[in-house]
Structures are given as C-alpha cells and as structure tokens.
Image (cartoon, rainbow, N blue to C red; front, side):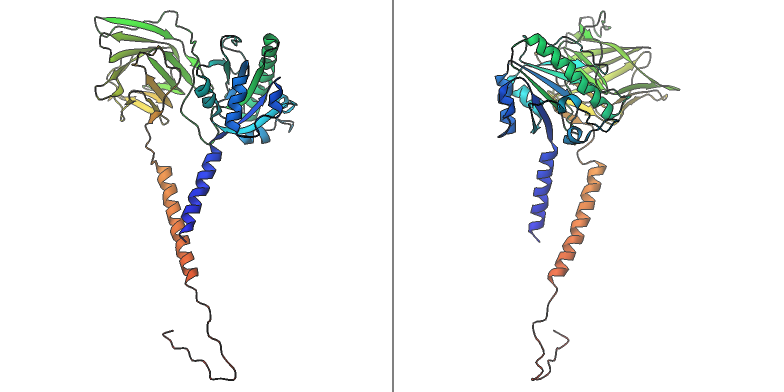
Length: 407
C-alpha cells in the first residue's frame, strides 16, 4: 500500500519528462550526420552544431512527435514530403533544443518567415554560425496545411543556402521552440527590428529624451513590439466604449525623463494613442501605471501589472483597464518586460510573473479528484487485505468443528 504513491509519482515524473521533449530532425551534407545522435542526444546535437560551418534551424512555435509521425495532408500523404524524402537524416527527442543551442553558442541570429514564405531579412551566411528561421503560422489554415506549407518553405530556403554556401558544412535542423504539452512563455524577437520612421512621444517632464521606437512585428499568433527599453507581446488589443473595436498598433516609442527609474511608452494606433508609464520601484519591483487612451485617462485594473526587476509579466486571461463611465482597454495574452539595465536591448522575455496563480481552479479540481480516487482505492485495498481465508477444516472422522460467533 505504501509503495503505490511512490510508483504513481515516478510515473508522473517520467511522463512529464517525455512530454517536455521536442522532436529534432537533422540533416546536411556532413557525413557525420548518418551515424550521429546514437548516444546522448543533447550532447551529440550540440557537437554537430559546433562542428558545422553554419547551422540552419527551422523552428516552429510548437512541434510534437505526433506532428512528425502522424500528420497527413488531404491526399493522406505525409505533411513533410521534402523531409521524409531525405536519405541522410537523424531524428531524436531533445529537451528545449533551441535554448540548448543558444546557451552553448551564445549569440544566434533570428530570421522570420511570414505566412506567405517571405523572409524578413537575408540569411547571414558569414556573420553568424547559427541562424534560427522562425516559421509563422497562417491562422486561416489548419495545422496540417500549415505544416505542408512549411515543408515547402524549408526546401526552398535550405536549397538557396546550400547554393550560396558552396562547400561549407551546413547542418539543418527542423524542430520546435516548445512541445505541444509544455509551452514556455518566452518568445524570441528579431535583433534587427525596423525603426519607426518618425515616432516621438510627448514629454512627461521638462527634461526628456525620446528613444528610437519600432513598428510592430506580427508573430504566428500575436504582435511583438520592441524598443531598447521595453519588449512587449499581445494577441489582441481592444477598446470598448459603446462598441468594441480592435486596435492595431502602428508604432511604439519610449520617452525617458531625468528620473532613470521611469519612462513613458507611447503606442500609436489607427484611431488614437495609448500611453502608460513604467516605473521601477525602490523595492525592486517594476509596474505599469497611468494608462491613457486618447482623451481617456485614469484607467484602473483589478490586478497589479508588474514583476520583480529582471522578470517579465504575463497574463493569459484578458487584462482590462476600465473607467467608471464604462470604457475599457483590454489586452489579451499580454506579456511585457522593461529594460532598466545598461544592456542595449532585450531580445527574449525572461521568466514571467503570471497573473494566474499556480493553484488555479483546474489544478485544484485535479488535485481534489486525485485525492478522492486515492482514498477510494486505499479503502478498497485495505478491505482486500482484511479478507481472512479458512485456516481450520472439518475432519469427517473427528468431532464437528464449532466456530464461535466471536471468531
């Protein structure tokens, strides 16, 4: 009886470990690839990347082993016509392969492919040893249709790189930034974000300096905004007065003051301007305050938008800023992180403070059901262990056995 909880915990831990791995398909002209990845997958993967002249990593936002093995197109053929036809390739499951590569090699370059297969910049063949090609999803297509299109994009981009690289040892990877069962809230953005043509924010004091802003970059399912002082992501932004309208951000800029612990963020939309202050408190926590939209100001929210210095803030449910008159400014799946350090720019969100506590309603429900089932099973096992078998038998030649009621 005492062993069952231990076995259950081990099974859960092993299942979680496998669920967190991401499939990696690797190929290239290097002869090492035909026999690589037969020992420690992570170390062999890193060795192959280090030994190559250029590593081209095609990354989905999420990718599972089922996508590789079970995805079928409309004709019931594999979604990966190009990848499945490669004669020399290796396949493994690795935990967070993109992060492993980044941690080992340090600086990597990101190139983004939009839903139509267009690159946001040329692939640097000499400037960087590792180039991660981030593949965007088309929200109007199914998962299978997107993977079929990505297979074609991979073939086209890889062949172009091979033609341009000549005799260089190019290693190509197809993987995901996360698995479908464990999605990290850490989104990458390009280190070469396009600057806004003219975006200066209104000063908040008599001494201000406006930093260079940026135009929004569309990711697979949301908008990324980046400036040297801030990194922001959201999937939807709406303003509600009498009707609800979706706001499209045209540009972002940041205005600094003489107070280094505060700056003002200005976001220009199709109708008006959103402004808010980001303040780094003396207690080591930063927060978003003084939200304005056009002529509306003094928005309030029922939660604190902020985190400890060096952490990002993320909220999956809608974050609603409201006024007493009923107007509301709503962000959906909002992640934000300011940069108060001396680093020139942040290109990746740090670990987030989530607006939803770890012990959410679904988790409490799962724990309650688990406890009830374990209690029922424990009672059942206890009753089974209390069953007594006959240990005295009747002898036809002797006296009849008499069993007292007490026994």
